[in-house]
Image 1 (tube, rainbow, N blue to C red):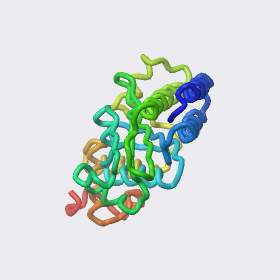
Image 2 (cartoon, helix red, strand yellow):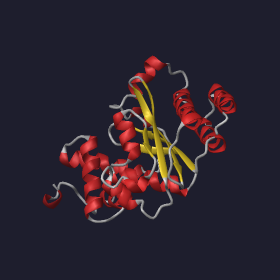
Image 3 (cartoon, rainbow, N blue to C red):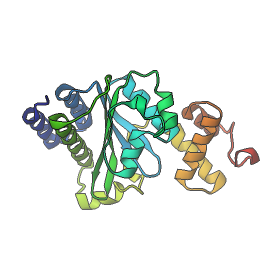
Amino acid sequence: MTDLERLNAVLRAIVAESGADGPQRIGAACLEYLPVSGAAITLMTGGGAHETVFASDLVMNQLDSLQFNLGEGPCVEAFTQHKPVLVTNLAATDGRWPMFTNAVRDIPIGGLYVFPLQLGAIALGVLDLYRTEAGELIGADLTGALRVADAALWSLLGLRVGETLETAAGWGSADSDGWLTGAPLHRTEVYQATGMIIGQLGVSAQMALAKLRSVAFAQNRLLDEVARDVVARRLRFDDEELR
């Protein structure tokens, strides 16, 4: 069972120090004090931008990439619905996220537990936890996970030096992508391609990203690969067949 008193003390110390490595230290504490196999902290926006700032292992990186590529999954649902998504057995959720569950069949995941990082109108992303074995996250373990999510939220808010909750509301809202600017993005080409599609079709950022995903899915390719073609001007979305 989770040692809540010790976990709380560690999380309070990390948040109080407001260091740039806060998300990484919180992720490490999560692995030490919670009975989970892996953890990730991911920044998200309502426009579809998505960036992982901490991932404990390759499995978490795979989960992040798949949900970003497909535009569906427990992280997307937790963020858009503003509530935790607790999946005790991922293999039994075929109808909920069909593309995602099909894509992760060979990844060793039993339970998946996702918590939104939000405070009122401020929505920053999600805390994502998994176990290799199926099962519930309950009692002190669930309470501990919620405490970790709270700490991750406050740590991310604290990274904006000089911000207050009032001034942070604009950059942290679900309709704003501005707060993500400056993050160590690993998907720069995806965002560049999205901007080019906006210019080609005159659509919103969310629609442009959806079109990019649809082509990647139809061609059975990674989203990053299709984005590179757009940036290199090998693929244009104002061509008639892609409209």
